Amino acid sequence: MEVTHGRKEDFEVVHFVNGSGHFGNSFFDPALLTDQSITIPWDKGTACCENLDEPGNVRWALENQKLTITIPKLGAHACVVIKEEK
Picture 1 (cartoon, rainbow, N blue to C red):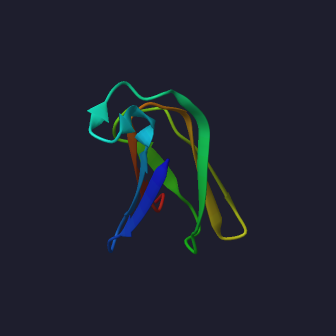
Picture 2: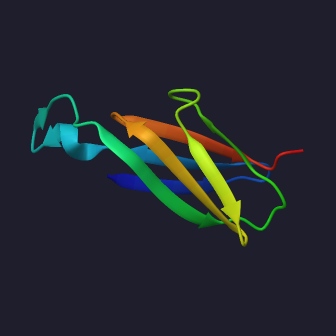
């Protein structure tokens, strides 16, 4: 799995990419991965995460200025947008 993290002024994005469906020049359905997580620094008071690829398929927890994002079922890709909850 590959994870990338990007930051803009008012939101952040985390991409989870499941590369198990790729070998050399061959492409096929990726293996389903479960409970894939990443923890990032988060110095804002609150957070709200949304999985743009599959709404509802994301969990998050904020503790000690660290945000842990979990994708319960990862197919090929998940794009999670993170915003400060107002």
